[in-house]
Image (tube, chains in turn orange, green):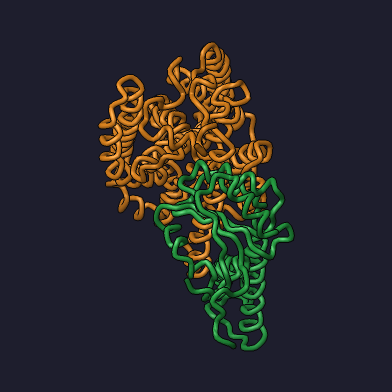
Length: 405
Length: 186
């Protein structure tokens, strides 16, 4: 039979084993130290933790985007009944379940609203006061907090639903669990679309509360999803370099990772440009102000860098089939996207804090390492010593045999 | 054109197989025997067939790249010439040649020309359009769309030798080897 050399799960290691505790000890330790350092650095600035708040917000929005990307990825696999992705689906399931720790990590923002957001500070320019009064029923601390509780309840419920059902299937092998997940997945996408859009707007767009954009929710999703694709690639390749998931995750699966990174790099640029072009055309001050702040005092240069660094380079780099099937090139472009998308989020938020110059601070690094370290640590903790592959999924065999046409 | 000869010029040899496993094994042997002008027909895509046949990667992506770049350049030049040269007209205070306004058209033409290159490039590489094929007159070959698998070695192949190739195909486990003629009617 043509499938006679099909790889088997027994051929490879599918659990973290002793690597798990090592990851969460090291990453967790480094993360906690970096977060403590961030708070100390923030306090030393004596600005009521405003600088800390912005640096923290950038990396928080960034990692939240990755876990949200994972959640929508899992739901998408179920809604399309995909078989190619079954062998790697546990990894995004875990990254989505990691929203639990992101709920905790939201506290420094929720407790510091008045130092980050002008609408919460009580000090707004006189000409914007009427507008803020108009938006106050939505933009107030209480409703903001309520919304974040609602978002996280919805996300964690969905993420755990998919993760727990999948884990249970490892033990029981019941096909009906797959049916249940498929049945929820369509609804999950609707819930996701609404909550992710509003969360993106709440977190980053309301920094400029006087600004309007109907594109911003998708912009945030695009950023999160392409970053997720890159992180999924890196996690898979890292696990393979330790001898885990070898052979069962083949060049064919990696080829699809490449396609996802390629497609969503372009999707991000498409959304970013669509927003820009309409405002450039209409040229109405209350719309162009957002770009005005982000095109002056060095921020414009960051914007131009984004065009080449975040869109053009990975677009050209991943265009060929060869690049998508090469482990080395995939790893290079995944790292590239991970960095480039962070710069993108930085450019979204930081000009509000520092409109007069681009100032990359040690705080930006410590917040990234802090949140990233804790995110990685809890990911390993959630993974535990359980299988990193949904062993009893009815489509696992198809996934192991998967070939691109 | 003269009336079709009932035997016609020999097109090639058709070998029938009952299942995909036998087929793939036979296909590997045909490849290793060094034949160049030959093909395989199956009712459904068989995994690993390209590899078994030793088919090299397609050139199509380069056609698509060329098509895309053509569309890109054409759209850019067209808009520059129309808006800034041939009929300069200031609209809502924008520059005569303003890149943001041109990008949607550039994007669309890049996609359109890439799609054309893909579609017509695929035709060209597959020798289409082709309204007639000698295999279509073969009764047995009709089952290629339901439950039989076929290997065809063309008479034009440099290694083709009627008795020898016939014997070779028979040795691969084919239950039935048949001559196919150009414009022949059974």
